[in-house]
Image (cartoon, rainbow, N blue to C red; front, side, top):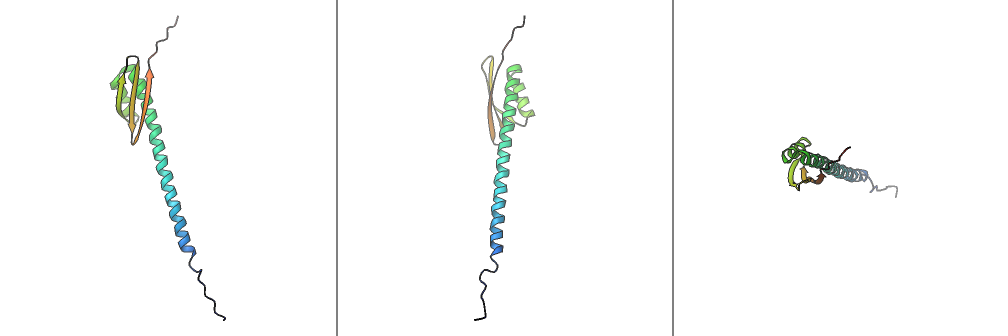
Amino acid sequence: MGMRVHRDRGQALPLLLVALAVALIAVAVVARFGSITDEAARARTAADAAALAGVAEGRTAARQLAEANGGVLVDYVDEGSTVEVVVRVGTAAARARAEAQVEWVR
């Protein structure tokens, strides 16, 4: 009767390992989400710059600005005074449109 059996011994280690695994998975998910968000922001910036360069100076300037911002010019449509581009950075793509306007000053 004086002998006690401790069946709960050693339960902390498996729980600690599960908690550590969950934490590592959470860190990996957050890091991947941050990477995707960063690529999307860089793609938007590169597309905006490429569209503005394209409307001002043409396709070659748009390609150069996209590349200078870490992107690749995927599509370029020149509709006279309006240019629309698609730029890809990593796995993210962004579309931008720019329109040339002339303001007359008297």
